[in-house]
Image (cartoon, rainbow, N blue to C red; front, side):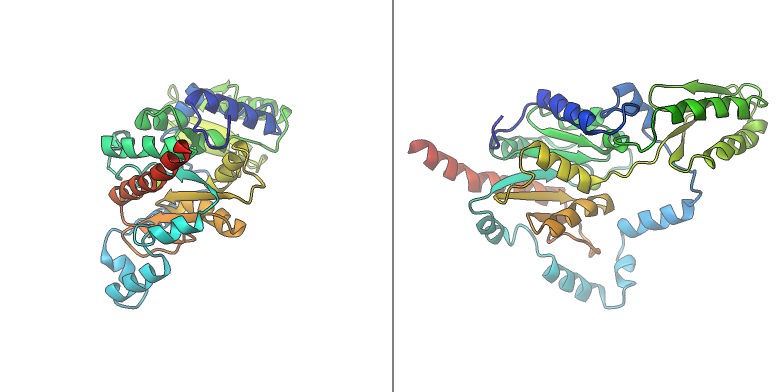
Length: 347
Ligand SMILES: [Mg+2]
């Protein structure tokens, strides 16, 4: 593959295989099988018990009314104006952005929810419009393009429906590179078996990628005791974390992986690791995208574009208000690139 080419979905397999090689452990291969990814959808991490903190954090990252903005002090309009000065619209500054990209290969990184699709109540209905799909398809014709998402790969590939993109699902990357060697899981499994045997109906399952404690056959009155038993085991393994699925508790490694690492990993996979002539453009709308914006800031390379109607603390340089503006930006990008390509092909 060449740097300029977009990469078909088959190449995703090659990238993910490379990631598996890069992973230090054979226990939690990257990416996980689809059944595993499915299993982890909709899980709630309750092991830390900081539910209130999580809710506050979610509120802070999704202001839906002016009160949240006004709380900083200055009147809302003034704050918005000051913020937009610091993070100007990527559409208004389009020419400036393009002139900064002169002689560089633009590589596009796009978040999905809230960036390519609107945020909707039912996450299973977060569809992107056909116009957005066409815009992304066109962008991918001219620039290497990746979708970087918290969703599992299967889901986002289904939503986007384009084969010519890279896809990076954080759920897949979540299990990359656990620090614990293989025997840990066997030990945890044995300890859990021992510790939960007094709870009638509890079933401990030694899966390929995690240890599960099913409680669908456990009397509801005993759930509290079972949770305590499981948590007592967890205390002995601080590098593991506990998540809850539907009538199942699952134990898996704590992983340090974020969209910033995904961005770096993808740049490397594309052959741009130490390249000076690359300009990554990352567009995203929430806190998880900040890791990617920060990576770009720290690299002093490329630019982050935050999708937000409201002033927010961000490491992004530019802003766009909503997914329709993202589409407009992508369309302009293609319109800007197309004549250059045509001129070149005539030479
Ligand atoms: Mg998002």
